[in-house]
Length: 467
Image 1 (cartoon, rainbow, N blue to C red):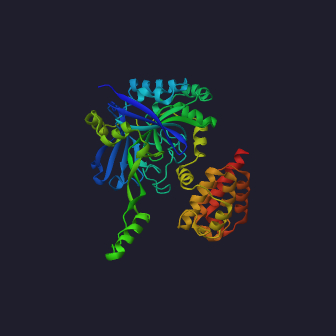
Image 2: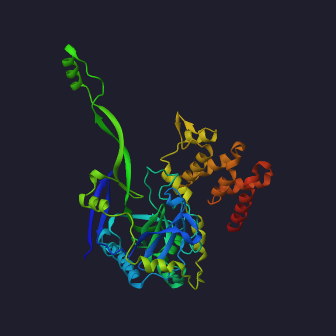
Image 3: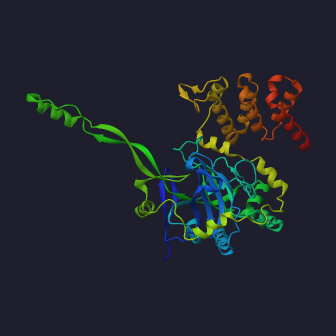
């Protein structure tokens, strides 16, 4: 059976969104469920797999019976034997095509043929080559751990808002890193239109299909890591909508009946607020049903969100296999690791998507201990959560205001509970004003600075060594 691939642009909110439908795809790579995590005897945890061909690549343990608001425990599968060469070549040729000027829908066509049936959105976006906590992603998943920001429904951002994934998960082991390819990549990324191709996995994280050495080169050279993103549209969303109803008042009888009927016809119909499925969404886009192409809507309704591929049995059998070498002897350049530590993390990105804006009046209200300004909740009714979210938002959008706000918090004894967290956040920014503040904190010996002394001492020593 041949693969039927169709693409179409739809206009949403003044922007054009590229949609691609796949029918008859080979499902060479994708995600599927592997049932409960019975190996650990934990029947409340669901296991999901990102696979390529017969290889289980990424294992995702989803607590609370797969609750979409809970972060995943993720790791590279111990049975992963490496990406098949022929599939790696498909990814390499696709990246070369879109860098030669081909459109995303045509340049990535060979990749679409390898995907499960469904509807996808494809777009260019920048990624941070980290796991979301300042660690370079390649090699960050050797040991299973809870990865912040991998929940499908992010509690900070909210379920009603869209966001763009920006952190990475590898589908190659660090064994493939070479200094030669890294040096080549440092020249390549200076002029490339696209540095990589990603497939959205969960929450703020995507799997990098191609561009590993480019990611390292971009991090070292302070160049944005630009990717072509493939993101599946599958989840329905609901929005309240009004349904016109007939008035329910009792009808009069007798000689006034005719006048009542005339008044009823002239009166506006009562509207009842109902809620139902109004469209389908992915992480970055919400598509109302009425603007979706009919054929794509049919594919969405007829296909399951996930299904077991034909290679499911041999793939699952590899989950119990352990690689001979689980840790590579390859060493990433120190310049890459240091730059990744300073990149935005999950908490900053969550805050950036959760808040539209913060003005000076709102910030002053937070410093005064209020969660409301002009009769409206600024961020959230929880005061300390509001302080933390405001800091993360400012750090992402406005470094100068962030530094001033953070110092004001650390100078306020009533906000003592947030001091340690804020000190760690501000330590990620290299700035002379922060250095002078921390130096004065150390010199003062004031007990009220107890929670920030460790961060202050480390920051001052590091700043002195660099200057």
